[in-house]
Structure formats: structure tokens, C-alpha cells
Length: 196
Image 1 (cartoon, one colour):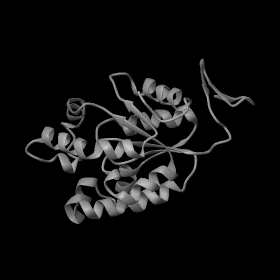
Image 2: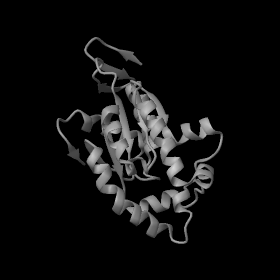
Image 3: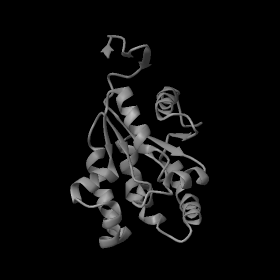
């Protein structure tokens, strides 16, 4: 990889226009299973930024899974930890931040998200989210008799909140994470709030 003086990063045959004067963050929000971690890692690599997954960072710091935090402290205890971590990582620069699916549930996080950087909402149909999460037991809110109904209810509540904080809404399709990351970069270059 090489940088030239015009602010274009050349990576093999791929040339991505970047604003090298801006060390701002990119914050990914959206429901569990939409691909924030996978796409976020690709996006960070593409833009030469650091990557952090808030849920994984909480697990690293506590030494236990998100599910265990929920079991011991309840959802409210988990959300307090999540908010504290979000405030900390929002102060960093040059990061792609993948947030937990419920980060928008606390009003105090909305302003933190907006100040943290450019917020991108990754969204997908419930059937796709259900397919991606069905074998993952580390999703405490989906450990119910009817995960589909739970996901539908969560999306009904959270979708407007994601949209409220995001400047870009991107519908995740069946394209590879790498292609989605390139699409995000392209869409971020367009002025104004967008939905694609």
C-alpha cells in the first residue's frame, strides 16, 4: 500500500479517495447479525483505520461473554458498561467502531454516537438476521422461545433510533463484506444524509 500527495490511497489496483486530513471515526450501528464486525474490519483495512468491536472489547475487559454479563448484571448493567465504553472509544480518532445492536436504546448514547464520527446504519431484513444469528448462543436477547418474533420486535423499536443517529443507511445484501466496505466508502463521498 502506498499513499500519494493527492490524498488517494493506492492498494494494488484499487484506488480509494480518502480525506487524509481527517482522522475521524466511522461508527457502525445496526441490529445483531447484520455484519457490523465483519464489514467494519474490511472498512478499517480499506481506510487504514484501527478497528474496535464494542461487544468484543467488553468481553475482553470483563473476561466473560456478553451473555454472562446479561445473566449477572441484567440488560441495564450491560447497557451501563456499553455506554461507558462508547464514551471512551468515541474520544479516539481514526477508528472504525462496531457498536452493539442495542447501543441506541439509551438516549445518552445518541449524542455520543454523533460526536464520535460518521454514523452508518447497516440494516437487513429480519429473515436474514435470523439466519445469521440462529446458531449463535452469545445473543442473550435471542435466547427466547421465538427468536423471530423477538427480532421483529427489536427492529420495530430500534429501526427509528438507528435512523435518527445515522447519516447513511445501507441495506446489507448478499454481497461480500469487502464489496460492502467499498460501497460504504463510495456512499460516504456523497454529500448529505442518504439511504441506499
